[in-house]
Image: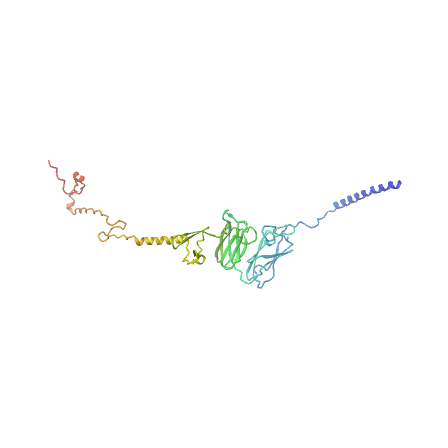
Length: 395
C-alpha cells in the first residue's frame, strides 16, 4: 500500500518542473535586446540592371535572345492576370515589328525575349512595360524603351498624337497604337497613356498607316469587333495625328433588288451604301439572259450619282436641239436689251428743249410763261407753245 501511495506523488511533481523551465526561458528571452533577424523590410521595386542588346546597338546576324536583367528575383506572374491568351509575363514586354507571337521566358532575375519567327533584318523596338514585381510584391512603375537594329539604320523621325472614343467623346485609355511602314504589313507598337497620348520615336521617314485600337481582349492585334481608327500619312521629321476609334461594320453590302430602267440600263440596289471612292469594274458584274443563261456584255458600271448626271445632261442636250433659237432684230433698233422680246413697241423720245437765249438780249427778257388749256388737257394733249398765250374764248 505504501508503494502505491508514492507513485502518484512523483507524477504530480513532473508538471511543475516543466512550468518552471518555461518561465526561466521566457525571462531570459525578454532580457536579451538586439536587432530582429532578416534586416529592414524591402520596399524597393525591382530595377533593370542592363538589357542585351543595348539601346542603339547594331547586331547583324543576331540569333540569341534579348535579355532583361534585374537586380533581384522577380515574380514569374508579374503584371497579374487579365483577359486574352497571353500570360501575365508576356504582357510586360512589347516587341515590334514582328509577325506572330513572341516568346517570353522567366529565369529568376532575368527575362528573355525572342520572336517565334526569328530575328529579321529590321530595326526592333523593345518596350518594357511597368508592372514587374519582386517576391515581396513591390511593383515597378517605370517603363523603358530599347531600340536595336539587325542591319538597317535607326531613324530619327517621330509620330505622336492622341487616341479618342468617337461615340463616347472621351479619350481611349491604354490604346494599342501601331504604325505600319508601307509597303510592309507589320508595324511598330506602343501603348497610349492614361490621357490617350502616344509617342513613337526613331522611325524612318516614309509612308505610314497609323492605327489606334481598343485592345479589349489583350491579344495586341486588330480585332474585327474592336473599335479602331486609321490614318495614312507621309512622315518627314515629326507629325501629330488624332485618331477617333469606333466599331466598324464587318458585314459587306449585298444586292437587294434589280430594276430595269430602260432597254439598256438596270439599276441594282444594295443593302448598304457603297464607298464612293472605290471604282466599279465590269469584271465583277455578270448579266445573264434567260431562259438559256446567255452572257450579256456589260458596257460599264456607274454609280447612281454619275448615272443621274449623265442622264440629265443628255436630256438637256436633246431639249436644246428641238427648241427654236431666239432671234432679235438688232438692225433697226440697236439698243434693245436681249431680255426684251422682239416686237415690243418702244415709246417715242421726248422733244428736245429749246436752246437757252444767248448774249445781251437774254438778260432783259423775262422768261416766257407756260399756259395749259384745260380742254386740251382733257383730250390728253399737254404740249403747248410757251411763247404764245392761249386764244380767248368767244364772247
